[in-house]
Amino acid sequence: MIDSQELEQTLGAGFGALFHPYFDGLARGQLAIPRCTACGRHQFPPRSVCVHCRGHDFAWDVADDPRGTLFTWTVVHHAKGTEFEALAPYAVALISLAQFDVRLYGLIPEPEGLEVGASVRLVFPSPDGEVPAGSSTVGRPHWVHANPD
Image 1 (cartoon, rainbow, N blue to C red):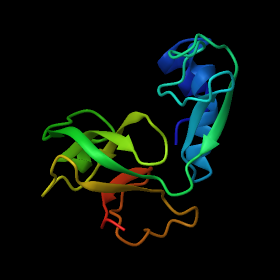
Image 2: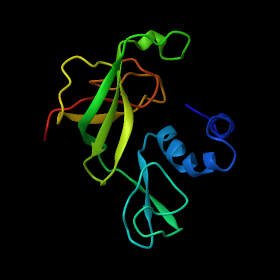
Image 3: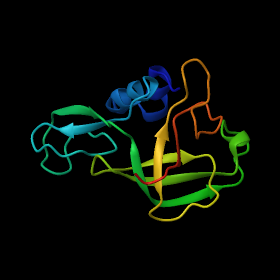
């Protein structure tokens, strides 16, 4: 999991602070999305100003059941020299969340059989190292194929 110092170095001083609640949620096994307290709309990625109403105050809502619909994706076949090298091939996907009206990118470690509109769900690594049912052995939150409810 990414830590606060690494986040600041990656995103830049000040900007990384916007993402702290998101990454803190992932570390707890939760998907948190910012909601503008002025207009009530969600947005992702986090910003200091609401893209809908220009409000400045945000609360973070946690997805009850982080599921979504596959909007688009690309398959990475070569990831030489990165922490993802051993995962290749994998998909980097744009997912429309079911609970909140936002899209976000995510990792799908098993890209076989992906289709636009497919149902996916977010799984988190277990704190004790066990692999969640229906998941791969990826040690970070990632998306997997889901059966529609």
